[in-house]
Amino acid sequence: MKTMTNIMITLALCFFSFFASAKVILINTFSVPNNKVEETIAYWEVARDFLIEQPGYVSTKLHRSLKPDATYQLINVAEWESVESFQAAIIGMRKEFKAKRIGKPEGVEADPNLYEVIRD
Image (cartoon, rainbow, N blue to C red):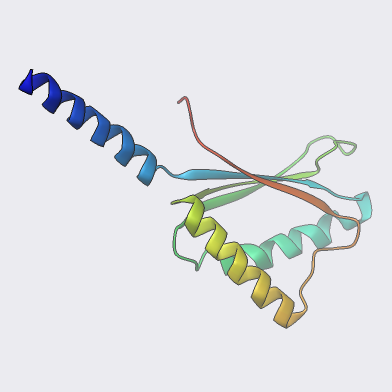
């Protein structure tokens, strides 16, 4: 019985430590007016340059649709060490962008969401 208890405790610790340290994936879709694509890419580059310096940042890639009439012309996929590190970075970015009066282009709609990888 003691061995079974030890096994269960070990499994529980492994389970919880995995989720405590699991990276999160940001998928941010951008609905962009056709005449604002290049301006939006430039805005994304400014945001990226800020975010890559933040604790917990892992990587990011911006994707552009091959279809000119796609609902989402741009999709950003980024990886962060944790939800908390992502949230702290975004709070910092918003403060800095507000102070510097940096805003996303008019008419651009972004829908950022965090995901966990469930299958490889």
